[in-house]
Amino acid sequence: MVTPKELTGELGRIGTLLRAALPVVPGANLLPGVRKAPAADFTGLAYRREHVVAERARVEAYAAVCGFPRKDVVPLTFPHMLAFGLHLAIMSDAAFPYPAIGMVHVENVITAHRAIGVGEALDVTTEVGAPRPHAKGVLLDFVTTASAGGSTAWESTSTYLRRGRSVDGDATPGLVVSDPPTGGIEWRLPADLGRTYAAVSGDANPIHLHPLTAKALGFPRHIAHGMWTLARSVAAIENRLPDAVTVEAAFKKPVFLPGTVTFAARQDEAGWTFALTSPKDGSPHLLGRTTTP
Image (cartoon, rainbow, N blue to C red; front, side, top):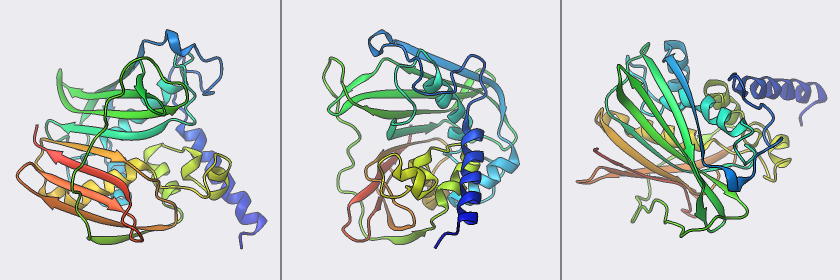
């Protein structure tokens, strides 16, 4: 039973996380959904941060939460942290036609061209184009590049679904992982995982923080971040991946907290295939694969 004092403290910590997640970008509208431009007029937006340093303290805090070992190079998924503020800035821009709340991360593709050193400075750019059709609404691809010395070191495409009215065109199939691996090892996820990951990532979406804030947005209780499930899965095989690698992932079903998931991975000639599933019925939470670019 949560006491009123404990609840007040918890809500205070959640408020701190939410305030910290707001992008400090000149000209950004920090109230998503207010004075949004018509979707029909949207052709794209881009935001950029220069000389962004992968600071050791943040890298190591992120690695600890996601299961990566401490190294002098950043985890494969870490540069997403450097770009997440740009994602929020774009979603908060009045020219972006959709509210940030309600954007569902459905797929992610990461390509590392080389290892990125801890302490290295990067120029990070995120851009999004016009929406693509989807059976349940529209898809928006947030394309990020992290470069140094004029050369791209890392890039990703984060695809978000916005439910509702679609746009003209033919919907394209998403990532298909045939014959995903089964069995594997169980991971028990604590109730505060969403808040812990939010503290190191800046992603303080209320659906991840507490049962109360998740219920307000239609969930029975709070859920794990999709990018945590991807990072934790990559961490499980990271010592067998080359520095230059592509990782594709599809986020299928939410992972409710606290909860238990099963991770399995299999290697073949093309690379690794991995899956995060429910131990109760085998339904997938995350499906992914790796290839060499």
